[in-house]
Amino acid sequence: MDELEAEMRQSSRFPYTYAADWVRMAGLAESRAEASQWRQRAAEEMGKDDAALAEELALEYIAHYVTEEKMRKDAEAKFARLVALPSPPNCNRS
Image (cartoon, rainbow, N blue to C red; front, side):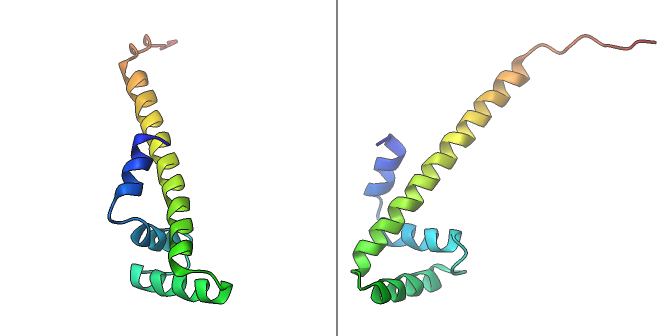
């Protein structure tokens, strides 16, 4: 577990806010309130404890978020290296 994932698991947003954000990200609700209602109904229909489902969804959200952050940081580092390269010589063939 990396530092960001650990930090997110310790946040007061874990698991319920992150679970709601996963539901919204999946396109199943527009607001966090709707997402929470969706999760509660889903847990009931599945015969699952709501807190257990919230934790599962939150862990999925964190995994997605951490992956996105790593990709963003990699892209920023690559861009910074490209910007640092010297400009190519003028290639006019006239």
